Length: 618
Image (cartoon, rainbow, N blue to C red; front, side):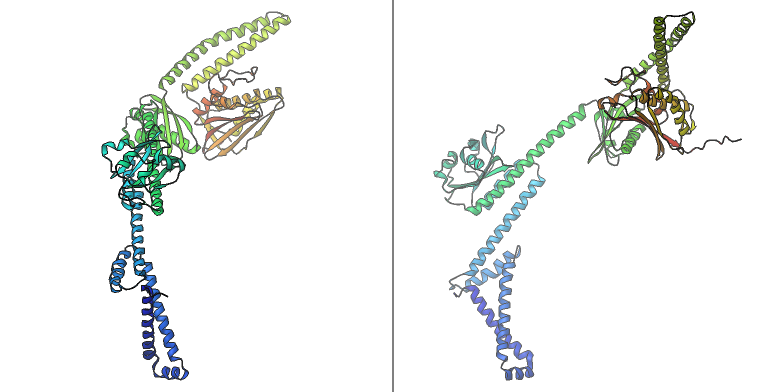
């Protein structure tokens, strides 16, 4: 075994251990132990064994302690252990302490590189300037690798040439750096990008892939690593050495590949940020220029954003409103609309009355991860037009009542004036049916006009069980005529509701008669009711043909009839509009659910009251 430095340390440690063992033996065992061990012949072996254990333990401690040193103790180990000992032993042939110094130096270099990687990673996270990050990467690569200059090639905007995007200490005049470029697939960047792997060129002067300008500037060797993103080439990172050939090895190439990956991440971050900024600018432009009023809220209902249209409408600056509740806008209906959307847990539409007489049509929708967005349009002109149209229709309808009554009276007189033949009787019957339909239409129009005009209603606590029974009795003859089954599921202990008995009965009759008219013979119409938290829900279900989905939003509009529906079904087209108006006047709302081929369900909700009906017993 050659006497290297570490072996001499081992021998010295063993000798020191034997000496310590002998001292331990004499000093601690005493005379009795000495006599016993001397007589038994075990004294010397024990001393030797103890010495060996002490020596070997000291050696292991010394060796493992050196190997366990890390930053910042490596520099101290290098200064305190290696350098003072080495001059004392010039004759040793196999210098393991020199090897230890090399290991320490490599470890120090690795830690320095890790520090640089940390700095670059921090730059990637914190900086939004891709050029600064690329400059730092190429500079760090030059400083930590055996090179004296470097550059980063990137594809230009046209995607057909590699041009210099960042450089450090290039041996080329700054004014000529722009001349260093390659077509896609050509030169060093084309080679590494096409093959997707790094490259070392030991003698750059002899390789045609190196740009002539770099060869003229004295570049003697280089290495290059591709910049790729999801398998797509972006460019290449090149490091040059102008003083020697074969300046780089495989370890250098692996480190360069890491720098190239960092550069690719920086480029990707820059592109993502640019795309995000572009989309943000588009959204800001839309919000700025649209005439729609946009209010964005967080989950708690605090204002996040007001667009300029909202600022003008509510006369509140966005900076003053942000972070405040909706009440800061001074419109109570906004809070009611938000509460309605929260309760429904879905998008809802709502009419917002703004102080000053304006009316807004608002859509309140939940936005995942944000809160709520309210988009509103000013429908004040449309509401005014609708009011004028309603007044005109009501006026015309009122004026038509008397002529219609005259026509009916004339038809009755004709029938009573004398015997009629079969053809005359048929014509008279059709005329009477037409006059009845006209009278019903006029009555419906006038009733709807009165409801929309806000005519007073005679509200009182009502037993909904009795009200629904009256409505069923009124529709039962029509159902029997059409051979339909009427079913009920109405508990007698429903909560009281407050309203006008005549109007609410008419609303239920309209829903029941509508179901009876559109359900084929042999079908079934079911009336259900049940109590909910603070309200009562009533449902009318039929087994009719169902309603197409595209027609559902229009069912409660005036004079609307579902395309393709039974043309012979009687009706004015105002029944559902009247139902909607009656229920809204009573603080409720109505909706419909339907599936083609399976039937429809019309339902409404009324608020319950806790008032007790007066005792009618004498």
